[in-house]
Image (tube, one colour):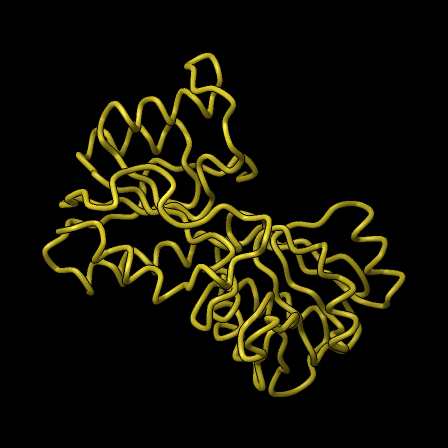
Length: 260
C-alpha cells in the first residue's frame, strides 16, 4: 500500500491545521511515496518500540508523540534521539505523528475522553481561530452534578489504566468539566473562562496546580500516558479496519516510566 493513502486517511481523521503552532506533526521521517505492508502504532517512540518495529518488519510507525520533536542539530548514536532516528532510517521505517492535531480533532483524544465520561453539550475549550466547532481541549456537562469522589470513581471505571490523582476538594459537587489529554495544566485559565469546576488532564506542574486552586478549579490527573494511550490502541483498530491489506498492531513493548 502506498504511504500517501495512509497519510491521507490520518490527515482526514486529524487535520494538521488543528495542531498547536509549536508542534511537529505529519510525516516526520520517510518517503511520502513509500510502500507499507506492516504498521505499528504507539504512544511514544522509544528504544523498545524502535526495536519492536524492526523485529516486526514495520515500514511505518504511527506515534502520538513526535520524533524528532525539535530539529536535531546532528544525528549521531551518542544522542538518544539521534540513535533512534539512525536505526529507523537504516531499517527503512517511516514515522508519522498526528500529536496535537489528534488531541484537538472532532473525533480525537479529548472528544473520546468526553464520550467515555458521557458528557453533554461538549465543545472546544479554546475554539480554533477559523473554526469554532473544533479547537484545544473539550468542556462539557455531566448529566447530573456529582460529588468529586463519584467523578473519580467514574474516571477509574471508564479509564481503568489511569493513574488517578485528585487535587482539590473531592467532596464538592461537580457538573461542568474541562478535558485536556497529556500536559494540560497550561489550560487552567481557559478552563476557568469556560466555567469548569474540574479540569481533567494527564499531568500538571506544581504552579499550575496552585493556579487551579486560586481559580477555584479542582484537578483530576490521569497520568500523561494513560490519558492518551487508550486512543492510540483505538486508532490501531481503526487503521486495521480501514486498510484490511495492512498488518497493523499496537505496540506491546512500550512502557510507561510512571507506571507502578
